[in-house]
Length: 167
Ligand code: ZN
Ligand code: FE
Ligand code: FE
Picture 1 (cartoon, rainbow, N blue to C red):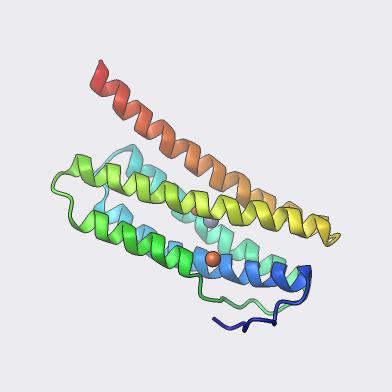
Picture 2 (picture 1 turned 180 degrees about the vertical axis):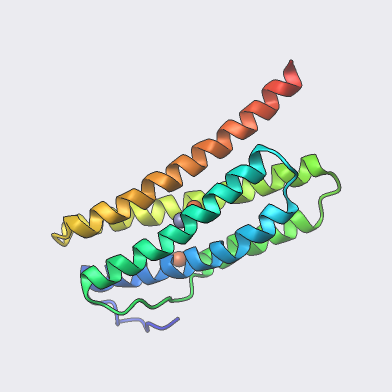
């Protein structure tokens, strides 16, 4: 990690560090989603991943905008949490035998990613406001809303599968 203990002295430092953490995470997600799209069967899950890949590219750009607005360098710092979530996803997906199980594993992995992002963006919105940066908060909230929508969409897909089976 780029920052040593003690380098984060105030809320502003923490805000910038967390921006760089989620910047790294978004870039890793943008790299991983194409692999998940390839693994997913044709259908709503693949469509949802394709849609969210487009959004994820916007998330990267929005973060670059916030770095610029805040007057700091757009730099990524390694986020061990997202690396772990992705590693776990790759392990799960590598071992599934049927399309149905693969899709269930992919959807579960994707929801873990969305929840990580929701927690980070939720925090960043609050800190931006605390720092008097409502402008930055507004941009970050746009992404937060899209992560929430992506998560809700994945829940919907899982519920539809359940209903199809019960019918
Ligand atoms: Zn995102
Ligand atoms: Fe992190
Ligand atoms: Fe996301």
